[in-house]
Length: 316
Image 1: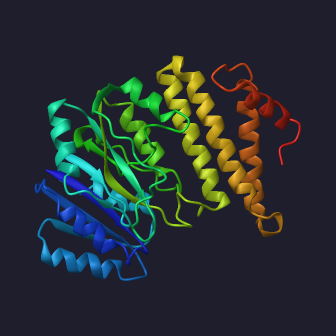
Image 2: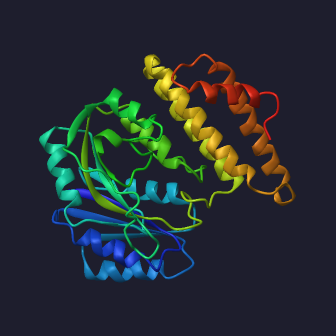
Image 3: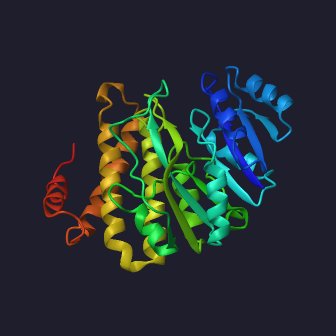
């Protein structure tokens, strides 16, 4: 059985489409754990209504504690041999979990990853960012974590397009004190325990891009600082396990830190709180510290290394 976890908060406009797509799976041996994370809209009512219509649905109601706590609450109750996650404003193809289950059993894998389609808030496919289809492939742990450090990553730092063997997950949980990049911690820990990972290069997951969401420009400076720490954790864990991946991991780490820092700096100084200014100073210090260590890293384009060097004398 597959346990499918859906945290719900302020997504009443999209939640029913999400649930319908899960219940329409060709793989029927599923349980659906809907977590109403203290949502102030009708999410809780919608979850309860669907639970009366399909006995495979279980609903958890809790005070608002964030997506990490919501997923953890469901993980603690999950009964399936496999675990999957779907974001409540997204939806999935009818054959998604059937194909993933087939692959995880065929290759005796620990994790299966599928492709995805970007969609607008209205649900229209983004034709400018098509997913490239190609044959499925079976890769080992080291190759999987290396792909997390591609620029951009070819193995995305999300859990929603993946199926995990429950015995692999064990007691791994999402950090509840983080409000950004919780997936990075969870995925890093799972991948570094995994034996085999299978990649299905078909777009079976539909990712709705909403302006102002956590992954599309809606993060506060404090949340961006959390993302810094999450990617630092990923970088340290990968390089401790695979020292020969340090150069590529460092290149990615600096790239994502600069991206997050520049995003944080777009907040006008007059609008920043004292704590936000402290967060920015800590972020700048982290970049400078790692940039010094990366000046001889041949995996980083030489012009980028020069920009890091120049930044040491005064970064915004």
